[in-house]
Length: 153
Image (cartoon, rainbow, N blue to C red; front, side):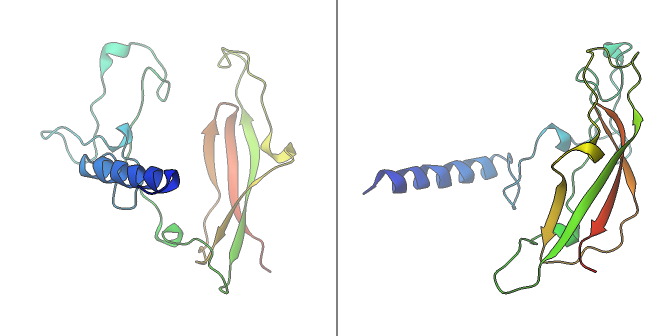
């Protein structure tokens, strides 16, 4: 290659091609990880076998992982803001509703309340996102209530 920059770009392109050929990334260049595990042929679709060798580990811990298929909503696909087009801005309003009890906080982590944080999460999209009901997520701090709030009035 005539320059170091072009050489790096060529190697990066070849790497992407090899990863795609080996099914490590999909057509949208997103990684296909362990979460993409397909079920065994004799099990109903979507059912993942539970391995009992882990004993009494909690579901979701590093010793007992639970796998699921990842999908991206249509409203978020190809939704990067574009020049001279309207942009919809959404705020992910979060509040810690059920803090992790002390007996489950085995590592003694400090619990952070997202409603008191100086930063917050948001989504900027060229597609309008429809009504989404509030939902819980489960973090290391406990149950967090999430609500998608449109910033446009």
